[in-house]
Length: 274
Image 1 (cartoon, rainbow, N blue to C red):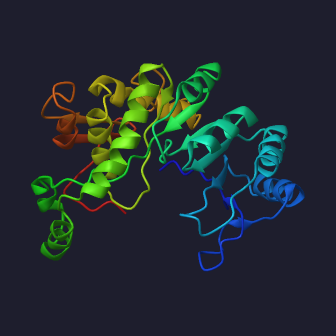
Image 2 (image 1 turned 135 degrees about the vertical axis):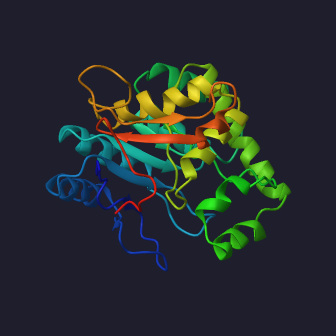
């Protein structure tokens, strides 16, 4: 397995939440946190610029600007968890390398699109939210226990508020995709099948299946600097899946997996992965 790490994230103090991230209050503490992350041999720096629904203070432009500057001086890129459009603008101006989640508070304006276009190397990982619609989960039944499947079905309902929230981010993704922004695929990691859900959501948001596949493979590997992965080429790792149906016709065909190859060898899918 390939294991990459952002080490401990950086945010303002969030009493009552987890204390794993670096809690900082000023530029000097932000720079010190970056130096600790560098010393840990992490691959990227992640910051949080979000009030969490008004519960906490968020990193100011002066503080996140210092963090980005210190990271770049030490050869590390910075990814930012965001919520608001104005924070996205400020972070782009400060030189952030990637945004984890798109803008979520409102539909983005032309200035935001222009800022993205001025930074062709900037990466967006949309990490879309639940669509808030009842869907067919039958494709998951075989891989889950009856109790696990029942828990999923219990929450599988139509929720207008969630649909509205998804709509904002879907429209923003469509607008940035049309502008040629480099998009990658990522999830919050709480579901083994999350990548399949995310690919479907990205298509529903307006991307083509091919664009989503490129985002999930070539673009994501390139962002992670995995130069031996992401595309099928001579000299690269032969890690790929074989499908029973064409995902270009329907992106959910990515779930119809016939075989999995790792380093050119077919995995025995009847055995648990350890």
